[in-house]
Image 1 (cartoon, helix red, strand yellow):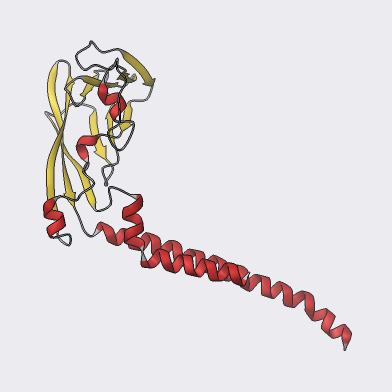
Image 2 (cartoon, rainbow, N blue to C red):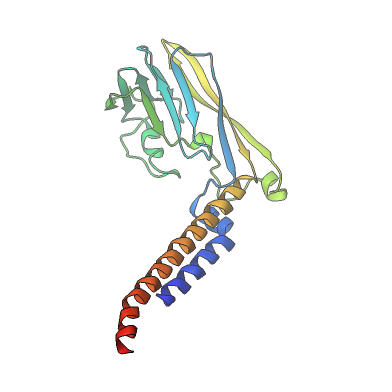
Amino acid sequence: MRRGLVLAVSTAALLCLTGMSGAEASDPFAGYVTKVTAISPSLPGVSAKAAVNGAYIVVTNSSATPVVVYGYQDEPYLRISSKGVWENVLSPATYLNKEQFIDSIPKDANADKAPRWKKLTSADSMRWHDHRIHWMDAIQPPAVAAAPDKVHLIKKWTIPVSSAGHRGVIRGTLSWHPSSHVVSYLTYGSIGVAVLVVLGLGLLARRRRTTAVLAPVAMDEK
């Protein structure tokens, strides 16, 4: 038990001390902040929101008029309405968005071909990973590398959409916020403290049980 406690203490301390590096190693989006700022023109019943770190975006359409989301080559990628969500199996974006980083796509996927729609769900919203809303390079933007302790607007992004034949865009921003690293520290620190508390209580309870069992034996020997 003592060895386990020592190991837990060491692990928790290591997590607390290396919280930032650990978070950055496991989260390629650490420090970046993605926001949806508008849908223009405004579409009735349509809303969009993104994960703060840019890991995904969600588009909801409660209206019966489908909204088409376009891929990286301006090809129809998703169709979303109150009756469900369809994806174009010939859209390269369908395969590029399966991973956080761009991967290979099937040979038959072609942005120039007519869409071949496949229904994914009867829900009125779709969540997907979109490479346009996060930082793609493994190297930090020059401004961030030069001054990582300051907030930086890295880029303004857009995702093309259409509804009833009218084109529009989902607009947003990608920024660098050094304060997000504080969240990493607090998260890892909280985990470390929780581990110590749980193991400490377990050790105390075990000692109490051991004392309770041995006490009658000691009295009988007298």
